[in-house]
Every structure is written in structure tokens, then in C-alpha cells.
Image (cartoon, rainbow, N blue to C red):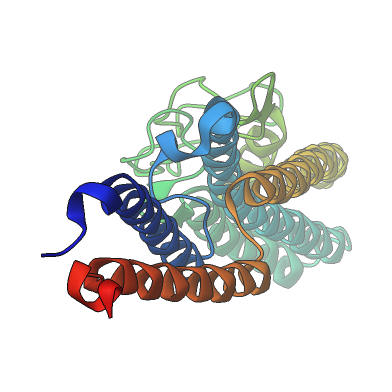
Length: 302
């Protein structure tokens, strides 16, 4: 007969202890494989709320980074387009300067050049990115400019004319942090663009150009050069602010991820060492349990 009554208490305690060690080892094995303290948030105890808050912060920062990245891409395309507008004005000024000599050839060339540049200007102001028209304000699904009627008829150098514009007055902006938004949009009816369209229309629709016409057109073109440069500078400033905000969010995200890692990760080498210790302890426990359970009165009496 085995000594179960006499050894039950000790045997039960040893089995309970062994099972507890086995459970601890199972948890350590998961930690060793995943590198995390727990598979579940509840497993972080008092740090659970901190972990959740950091995860939310990382997600929010990434959303700002994504928005800033998209906006920055649009701004870069817009900056390039405004640069092309500046080139158009420069080409027109060159053609007008050549026509100022009074030769009919120079005048005819200036008119022809203006007609071509007006078409190019229309294409620039209808620039798209990711399927959206960039210079139409909030109306991004339809062309910002339509010159089907604007390009015909007599033009004027003194009267503003934005009849070519098909968009609205909304300026694009992007939220780059909880408390900061950057406005970067420019619409095709911007005064600088209107001046370019106005002088192009006047020259393109003229049958001839007098000396006075050329002088007035050059004056307006010179004004447009300055105003277009101002627009480009504003777009550049918006790009700088977006990129700066994106950099700040990227740094913050890295910082929050680092803090979260400190709270959730484990030292795999240390865990491996603990597993080795527990394995030895568990082996010893099962050996002791086996010996106790194998005891019987007969073997004791011998």
C-alpha cells in the first residue's frame, strides 16, 4: 500500500508548484517567441492605459504624416506649375519687346506667340494631381479653367476678367497636427494669374499692335511677373511649413513608438535565461514528485 494519506499534503503542494512553474514557463516561451510581455493589453497591468495612449498617439501621428505627404506632393506640383506660368510671362515679354521695333513681322510673331501661350496657360491652370484639379479650389473634379469663350473677342488691359474660371473660392489646406493647419491652395482666378490671362488675351486677339498697346501690355506683363513670383514664394513657404510639420510628427511618432516598445517588449536573452532556470526547477520538481509517489510501506519496511 502506498503512503498517499501521509504524503498527500506534500505531494499536492509539489504538484501545484510544478503546475505554476509550468504556466510561468509557457508565458515566458510566448515572450521569447514574440519579444512582447503579453499578447493582450490586459497583460500589461498598470501600464495598460499608457500603452493604449501611446498606440493612439502613434496612429494619430501617422495620419498627420500621411496627410502632409499627400499635401506636400500637391504643393510641389503646384510650385512647378506656377514656375511654368512665370516662364510664359517671360516668353510673352520677349515677344512684345521684339514687336516694339514696329516691324509687322515682330507684331505678327507676338500675336501668334500669345495665342499659343494662352493655350499653354490654360493647360497649366488645369493641372491635375491624383485625378484632382489643383487650381479649382474646392471643385477638384472639373477643370478649373475654360477658355472656349474667354479666348475670343476683344481683350482689355485695364479691366479684370476671370470669366475663364470655373472653380470656387475655397483654398486647399491640410491639418498637420492637433492645433495646426497649413493653407497651401491657389486658385486659377488669383490676381497674378488673371493678369497673365488678361494680357495674353489682349495680345492674342489683336489684329495689330500699336506702340501704345505694346507699352501697356509690357507694363501689365511686368506687373504679372512680380505677382506670379509672390504667388510662387507663398507656395514655397507653405511647402516648407508642411515639410517641417511632417518632420515633427515623424520625430514624435518615433519617440512614442520607442516609449511603447519600452513598456511592451522584453529582453529576450534574459527571458531565455529564466526559461533555463525554470526548466531545471520543473525537472527537479517532477523528479521529487515521482519519488514520493513511488514510496510504499513494503519498500519502507525493507
